[in-house]
Image 1: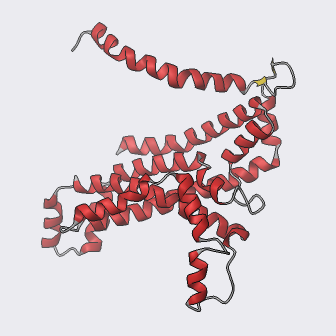
Image 2: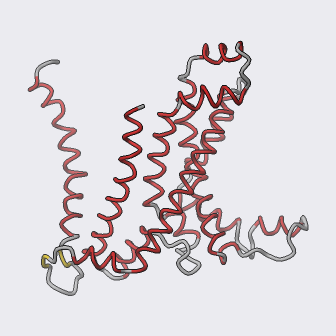
Image 3: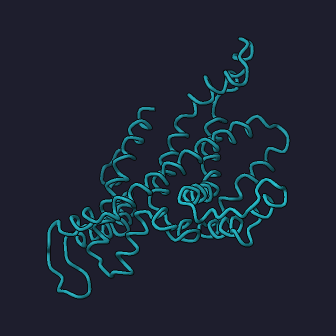
Amino acid sequence: MKDSTFGFLVALPGTLYILVLVAFPLGLLFWLSFVRFDFYNPIVFIGLQNYYRVIEDRVFWLALQNTVTYALGVTVVTTLLGILMAAAVSRISRFSTLFRTLLILPWAVPLVVSGLVWRWMLDPGVGIYNYLLISSGLVGNVINIFGDPTLAMITCILADSWTRIPFTFILVLAGIQSISVDLYEAARVDGANMIHTFRNITLPLSQKSILTAVLFNSMFSFRTIDVIWSMTRGGPGKATYVLGMQLVDYLIMYLNLGVSAALGVIMLILVATFTTVIIYHLLRR
């Protein structure tokens, strides 16, 4: 096992796999971001002009603001509910397998389908929620959630979080179950109640799992457009228009591969920036 040649040969297939599937597309993305590629003009090197075009577009800053709001909302909701669900299930002794299975089921639903289901449930015309609110007398008129910018963003966050909570739940539950039972027993002997043990034992000792869940949820929610596309298409107006949708517009609507590649690189840099902070704290733990 100490033979470096043997180690190199063992690592060679995985290295080639990464180079083919990751390094080559990434290099192509960077190359496209520095050339003019719009299917109308010759392909020439133009330096940073694609980046200037993206940054000077005022829609970019609106989409960036919406993306940060969306990713932050999804990460907060999934983290809080995932931790609470994991802490609750870890204390269940009977039918724990049944509860775990039921809580994991939303993870199997594609994000596009989740958006369509929530779109139907909240529809002002045929949605079940408006029907229940009016039937119970809580509201007198139909609430058009998708016509209000704030409510539209909130519902998109909830629909996305619904499918990501099980992932956080699994990671945090694994971290909680790795904690020694002796610590909880010693805490009970010292007179600690459930809140004290959760705050001083469960949370500190499962921080690695929590940070890992935050890392993945923040990365995926920052770039995803599935739920927004199936629920609001970026509306009303541009209230839920995110960077991923702007990239799709540059690529498909305007057929400008150079500008869309530049926006993709900017998104990659933004994701790498805030994930580096999370990975630093994760490695310290």
